[in-house]
Length: 67
Image 1 (tube, rainbow, N blue to C red):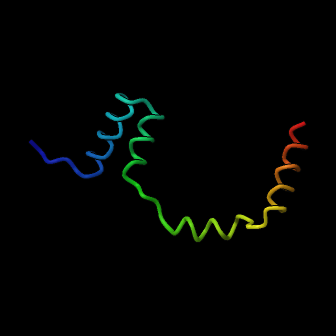
Image 2 (cartoon, rainbow, N blue to C red; image 1 turned 180 degrees about the vertical axis):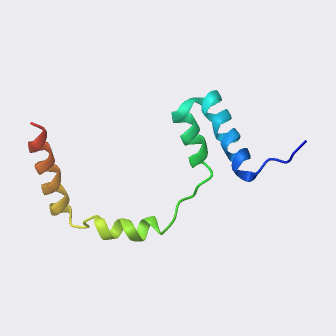
């Protein structure tokens, strides 16, 4: 029996996961093994405002758009 390449093993494994779990749960399963990259807390501070008045203003603006 010929040894499979890593690519072949990967493809067969992904196919098996998709067939058994379905596409959505396959992705959720794979995500359990990826811890991500970067420093979420540090990056979050860059795009979130710490000013409570600014946050309230943004919420009110979003609510007006939904009306």
